[in-house]
Every structure is written in C-alpha cells, then in structure tokens.
Amino acid sequence: MEKNHELTPFYTKLLEYAESDTVCHDVPGHKLGALDNDMILYAGNHMFKLDANAPRGLDNLNRPTGVIKEAAELMADAFLAEKAYFLTGGTTMGILAMIMSSCRAKEKIILPRNVHKSAINALILSGAVPIFVKPYLDDELGIANHMEYDEVEKAILDNPDAKAVFVINPTYFGVTSDLKKIVEFAHSKDMMVLVDEAHGSHLPFSALLPGSSMEAGADMSSCSLHKTVGSLTQSSILITQGASVDHIRLRSTINMIQSTSPSSLLLASLDVARKHIYFEGPKQIPILIKMAKDTRDRINKIKGLKAVDDKYFLKKHAYDYDETKIIVKVSGLGVTGFDVYKEMFDEHHIQVELAETHLILAVLSIGTQQKDLDALVNALKIISDKYAPMNLPALLPKIKYSYPEAYTRPREAYHAPKKYVPLNQAVDEIAAESVMIYPPGIPIVIPGELISQDILDDLDFYQRSGSVILSDTEGGYIKIIDKEYWDKWSELYEDE
Ligand SMILES: Cc1ncc(COP(=O)(O)O)c(C=O)c1O
Image (tube, rainbow, N blue to C red; front, top):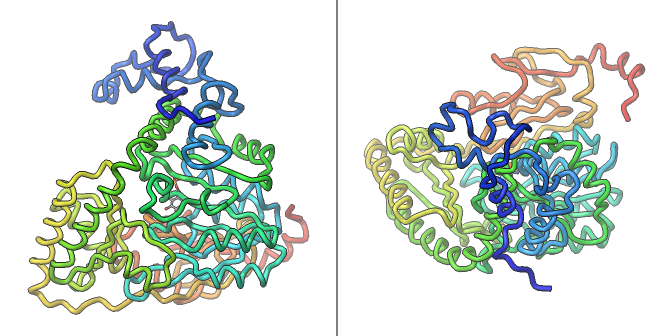
C-alpha cells in the first residue's frame, strides 16, 4: 500500500504531548522548559517542551510498536528500504551496529583504508579482521577518495572467507564507486554489503544524484540525515533490505550502544526531515545542482583557483559524483586549504565543511541560498586578489600514499599492554591508538599498525598546518604496544 508521507507520526504525537499541559513528575529535570537557564532564555521553551523522555504514547526506541514504528516505516519507504532504525548517536552508531552485527571476532571484513574512525572502532569492538583496500589516491587534489571496482573484486577473490564488504557512498568529497557491481559480486560470494552513507542521505531524492545504497541492492546502510537532509545534529538512520540481515542481532546491537533516554528532539527531527526531503528534494535538488554548477563556473574564473566537477572526477576513475559538493583547489595561490579555511572564517564569517592541504570543501543542501554561494565566491575572489600578486610557489602534492602495514588486529592492539613514547621515538613501534585529523576524522594510523617515518612526517605536517589532531595521547606522545610484556601477557589473556 502506498504510504502517506504527509504524516509525521512521532512528531505529531510529541507535539500533542507538549501542548497537553501534563504535570511532569518524570525526567527530564527542565520540566518541559520550566527553568530559566541561559539556553531556555535564548531558545524559548518551545524546544524544551519537545524534549520529553518517555511519556505514555510516545513509544520506545528500544522496541518500537507505536508512533516510532510508524515513523520508521515511512522512513524505510522514503529511502527505498525494507526496514529503518532511528539512531540518536549519528552514523557513528550506525556503522558500529552494522559491523558488530555482521562480523564476529576474527572474521574478515573488506573496507577502504580511508574509513571514518567509527569503522575502526567497530573493528575493535567486534574483533573483526580488516582487509584494507587502498582507495584511489588523487595526486592533483592530494586526497584519498573512492574504491575502484577492480581493487574490491581482487580483495573479494583473495579473501573468499570475508563476511562483508564495507563501502562509502559517497566519500566526503562526493565521489562514488560502482556500488551496484560491488554488491552483485559480493553477493555472488555470500558476502554482505554495508554502506557508510553518512554523506549521502539526499541521494534517493533526485535522479540527478548518484544512486543510493538501497537502489544498488546493498544489505545495510547508515545515513546521517543531519548532514545533508536537515534533521538535528546526531540524528541518523540505519536502513536494511534482504534476507541476509539478522534483525534480532542487529536490534540487540543497536540497543547495546543506544541510550535508554534517546532524545525526542532528534527522533522528531528525523520524522519531519523525511517528510520535507520526500516532497521538496525532487523539486529543489535540480535547482541546487544548477546553482552549484554556476558557482563552480564563477570560481573557475578566479585566478589561482579551480573548482573541480563531475568531468574531473570521471577522469579520476570515479563512478559518479555528487554535484552538491563544491571542492575548490586553492593551492594554485601558494597557500594551503587550511590557510583559506581559517581566513574564510576569521575574515569573511564563512564556515566551510573542511580543509585539506590543497583544497576546501563546501557542502550544500536544499537549505543553501544563492546569497550564501555569492558570499563564498566573493570571499574567494578577495583571497585570490590578496595572494595571486605575491606569486607564491604553488604547493607540491603532499600525500605520500604510504598506508601503514598491519601488525595485528585492532582489537588485539587495543587490549595489549601499552606504553607512551614521544612521537620521534615511535618509528617501527606498533600503534595502540588511532591518530586522525578532524575533520574528516580518517585515521592516519590505527591500533595494530606499524608506525613508519612517513606517518610521523605526515603528522608533523598536519600539526604545523594547524589542523585538529585527535588521539588519546597529547603533548607529542603516542600510545604504543609494550612489546616486552606483550608475549607474557598474551599467555594469560585469551581474547575471544
Ligand atoms: C565518511 C563518514 N562516515 C561516518 C561519519 C559519522 O557520521 P556521524 O557524524 O553522523 O556520526 C562521518 C562524519 O563526519 C563521515 O564523514
């Protein structure tokens, strides 16, 4: 039966509750906005009135049977899936749940090395063995991007015992792999296909965008509706289709990592965002793509800058490109993306999504207005006028393409005895923590990998360029496996 996407079952019920003048002797302690803390004074108490915990009638996210179930059915329908789970811990949580529910300890999973840190954490929690595929390395932009089909096929053929293949659709930079072909081949070898669609929640809503995970036949996917579709930050979904998904195991995994007090604001925002994108996406995404194209054309007329497009990425072996991402190569001005990122914010009040050595990335959505794109172009023009006359030497590609070698499984490294050493004494040691640049949050080294001089040089470069480095250890130290105690300790501790 055709679904009525005008309905917002969860939000409607929540609104009814907020307006019901119920006397609250339950949590949360703000009593639906009855306090006068600074945030309530700023935002008004409407937002707090919608922040209910678990009143009767509002269903239970851990085992939905009422309005959450109805809202999830509409979500599944909109995303061409069979089933949808609402998540309040972002796609970070969706990735943990997908991997933990499909791979047991010591089972293999094929995945690109440039995965988000949540996939690495899922390897630690599940104990799975990563089979990393080297992503396409784009020399011109200095980035690691999508996986090429042949590389995935080879990994599948070399590892016939792998349980799953994990694909990013699209990458942070908007590029996709041939997901349909990957799914067909993986399924022919009895492997599941799990998709990180953190940056692709809008894909099902316009034929002008790359295909979505469910269209390609993938088993599971997690989408950050908060990133490109307009729900509140941290609200995501996990969608599934097909008989390979073990829903009992998936549900228990989700419940293991889900708060017992999930935010009703986040859930309601998913419900209304689904309705909005369902009706507005098909109308507004084509307009947005045209606006993005015009913006690229204008940027390409500015000295020292290059806004890359679908033709560029197709030449770089991409399967498809999401044109709602604007990538501007700025290194032709002799400055880094990090410099421009800072200058954009400090001097032009523009926050872009991320910077890399050579580029900045602006992420658009149907909330983007023409005046916002004009501001971006104007700021880039001012920045170019400042640097182009200086004739600074254009930056050379920095990326070294040296992914570290794995010494042991991430989970084993996580549990092994550790010690801390200064970074400059860490060469040839085994990392016991992930070290990453944020954004994008992709680890340079993960637990269990050998630390090479190249890795340390990369870290040093990122540190000097002012990027945010995330790791457990601070102050120029890194956590490594204490090899001396490791052997002795392994005899005592039997993992799994
Ligand atoms: C590629 C990728 N995957 C997953 C995530 C995690 O998504 P979320 O922020 O919704 O937890 C991110 C976040 O930036 C990401 O860039």
